Image (cartoon, rainbow, N blue to C red):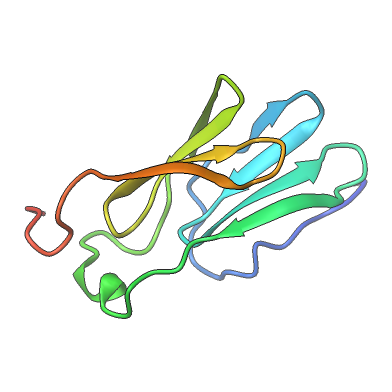
Length: 108
């Protein structure tokens, strides 16, 4: 029997693997990153990504997210509008963001 559950409040497919470090579980979907205490399920922080209105019209393979990576106190992830962002794993605050491609001209 599960000790707790958490809803990402999204009915699209979830393809990202959760990450766990120092008792915190990190989850990503296409529009948010969440940090949860592994024992209680209590949300430590949530970082929401805001997209330009036309972003979802140019997504080639469905609205999904394949997860993030942890390194040196940061969680790195990509976004639907072709950015790579780094979040502080303690606070969820964005540390930096860089554009990796032009989402309107990228080949599919």
